[in-house]
Length: 177
Image (cartoon, rainbow, N blue to C red):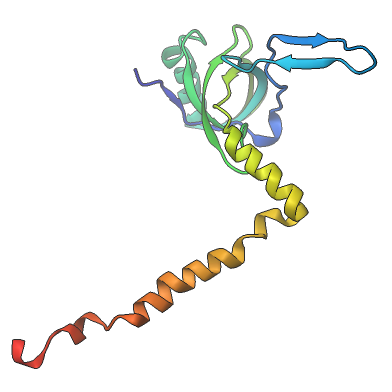
């Protein structure tokens, strides 16, 4: 089943979130700080969001809320900056009951807030470990540490290899025409 898509992106500065609540256990050890273990499977987070709507978007947004999500009872997909601080990713979400509020209205502009329950995307542990290792090795400039290798590869593919082969029109011999 394909979920409906919320095409209205909330204002990025309007939302914040706290890590998903889960079963966290602490065990006190003799002579030291407690050890914690936290599970991440199937947890969701709640986050307040705000939309600034204008003109016909106001009616369309409320129609989406009432019909596509059943006033928050059904899930939908929404694009948020949540898992990756540099990229927008799509998430499954619900409107929390009774959280939809009109915060401000003037002429044909309206500010609407709601609280969403959002399912974070699966975290790529291998990529996270690679990032930590690269940061520890190269420091704050770790993202640019590999650019010379990439530049060398681009030169090889786009300059060196094409120069090693004659252009296609050189493949035709005079007697073949």
